[in-house]
Length: 192
Image (tube, rainbow, N blue to C red; front, top):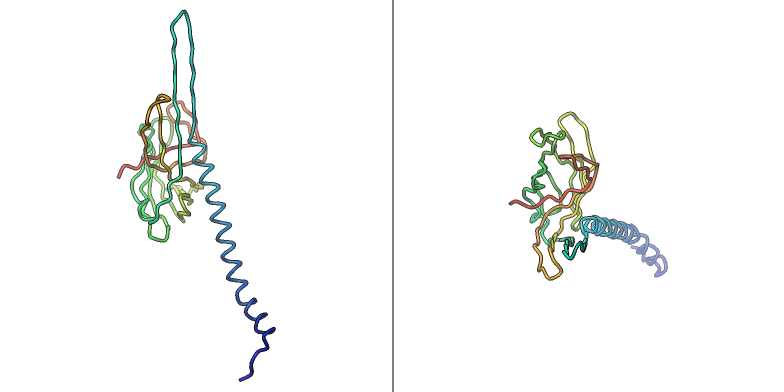
């Protein structure tokens, strides 16, 4: 058996490792992109409002602050469960495997009447960190991109309030009108 020269061996070794390094770099880039998108989605669910009005000696003050932080769970299966948007007619049930692959079903209002719903299936769902992506497929074959971030959302009613924290899925997407209100952001609270 013929031995390779040290120079030729080095070239062979580097040539064998480059595809591994490139795949790893692409995976790191995808994860960094997912983290950036997750933070952007969480930030869109944060808000702050503090208004003080005085009229004829009467002082009225309104305060509301909401902080949203992404939640990355060590075991992706822990994201499984039923999530609902309170009082708006949206719900989704997620089944997540240990690799972060997601299957799900859900429903949303079909129009201004919240009691009329249309169902969908979540296909090609995947969790990367706290970011969930997939495709909503409706009974008529229509498809929509589905994207959201798992987060803790804490609401404060005053500057001294300790806040109330709720875990859920913040979803951004197409604009929908529900009960006279138009939005493209929905916070699905974990129910079970």
